[in-house]
Length: 155
Image (cartoon, rainbow, N blue to C red; front, top):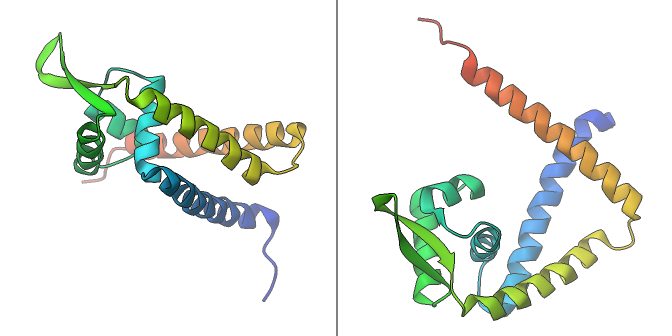
């Protein structure tokens, strides 16, 4: 098998690392009786209290019906509450409850342990450099996707 140039290997490596990270996070989240997806919902709401479900689904790149099931489960467990939107009677906004605070503290600590395990002894300067590179990749992908949606389809 011939070796791939690093430019060709990088997208495969990013995908494999992301898959392994998701698997590891799922295993770690089970300690607290939750899934990585539930953890992601709680973490996003902690940073952005009062989101509509559709906004949260977009942020998490999830289908609204899948998110509804997650939110229902978290609400049933008393960690999330739905409140009416003062500007739209049909819409509900999502908020963490007081009961979610100790859960979030444990999950934050777990996140620190997970990050420490994943990043190990990689120097901070290397992490900064990786973040810059991944940020550039993300920008390039967004531009490419946006360019595709701006091109009118041929009739």
